[in-house]
Length: 291
Length: 310
Image (spheres, rainbow over the protein chains, first blue to last red):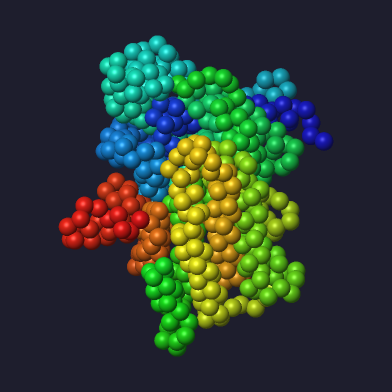
């Protein structure tokens, strides 16, 4: 039997990593909640953020927690033309055509990254990476706590944008009923473009955190995409604070599964939770509404 | 019907005069037939019934594992093992249908994507199926010609099933479910049954194809047989050819195989180009190349649409 300290440390790690992964799922969630678009390119957006963070650090030598602002701006700006020129013109064909397009985009980007950056596994080095944090009997790497804090701050920031600004009001109106929102003067097209860019920016930050905490290759996108879908389904589609809780719930569940069943079952438990949630409670754990 | 006969006839000529084909041509022919079968099955599901699946890999993989398991433990003939492998896929479809059919439209797509990945992870982790290293087939390596014949039989069965499905009452029921599930239920269509039947038939064909692929490879492992690449290729093929059109998957499969052979030395470029073709076609020719051909024909004939192809 494992010691209590190890179990407590492992669950705490799961909690912190889950909270961090919640940020990687946030963009997927708001795009789904507001635009009813399943963005299959979200995983590769995360990887784009991870590469951007990696190369910015290589070139400038600055701390990745500083350059993450630049990464957010770059990935967010790159997402703008995708929505404007690739997805927007397809809106009239229903929900499938834009999804197929994001899927096509994902395989194009993944293979361009493979060609350009090779299939080598990379990770972003930080000075805090090896520092342990001791809290009574619990021991976790300090970097987990820092990434968790960054994630929670960004999620709260997005939450405040949505509930406190006029853009947020337009966004919530478009999410509930785009037709009615347009009638009362909301520029739904602009809201969608900005929402997609916001989702991209969140993916940029989330991708950098993935690069710091784990390692990544161009092909990692699909794995994170599936984890993120699980978080979105747990938290409720478009529910921002729900995403944070969903991430934490998944992180703790995965660490428990890792202890009880063995490490190989961590990802499997996520997918089982995902399918079970979709089948039993597709609206998520909480009652909340979209965005 | 005529078109399907022509296509099957072309492959049958290869079977009657094997000395005309090099070993390479025989291999390509086998792969093309396998892809056509997968594409036809996916098109039945997505194009006719509106169930856009990203979980084809689960069915390819289950067929492969069933075939290897059967041939390794029983003296079963290959043909029967392929049929039972297909049956394994149909059973899997029936087992997961209560869960995946709770999801409509796009959620079904994401649910099937998760199903494929869950199956792969289970095969890696469960102690009975050889784990990440997979299983070896203990029977003799098949000749290219034998494989070609098995592929041809599967292709003929598939074309027969598809032609029957496209000209029966079922095709009307499937299209009703695709176009508006609630309205179909209102007028008395048992939507769950229609979807389940279609899902099981399509899964049977996909698993049979997966079983043949396993027989060809003689060694299977979870990352290859349950790989996302199967789901991706099948979807790309049908979208490129023309989803919901009778001959879409056939032309899509031939084009995707040809593209893959032309760019065989540049695998990344090949997939990236497939992605670009996908994006361009979704934008400018939502009915794929076959749909585009239909429009062109109608345009030359002075009519306004390619209605005759649907």
